[in-house]
Length: 196
Image (cartoon, rainbow, N blue to C red; front, side, top):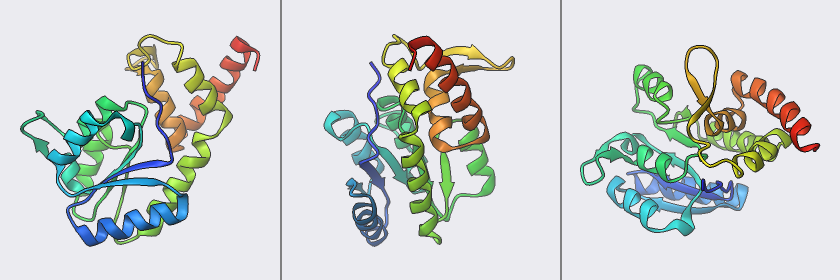
């Protein structure tokens, strides 16, 4: 069964301790979020896999979250995505190049990319995520996902690639154009299916 993320929990991975402290304090003050802070990717991976009470959550990390951790054979973002498929991952970094960001978004390693030099963008993005998380289409889709045995596997096709229920939910919560389209469809379809 896929665990459902909580927008009240944040996993923050940032090598710079002062930046992590400030970001953590802001998350707690603005959103009342419970924040777990890590400065090393291997420690973050171990915690995500060992402590299920901290998941699901929203992940916010700088570029180190995309470094491969040899012990796990993957980066923190990949480990986190596998542990909590519906959760969103925000890259919060000034050092990633536009080409890297495009590639990581395309590969599904991250969901959003924001620059540290403008922290207000991060908090605005999280506020948007919170409102879309509580939207009727997202709630209905999560309820439907809970009834499916493998919602992370492609179950629909747009003619070019398979799309899973989990991917559709993430698009809705991110607020992308595709997500807005998915929200309209799922709200209508699920209303007809369950009469809600």
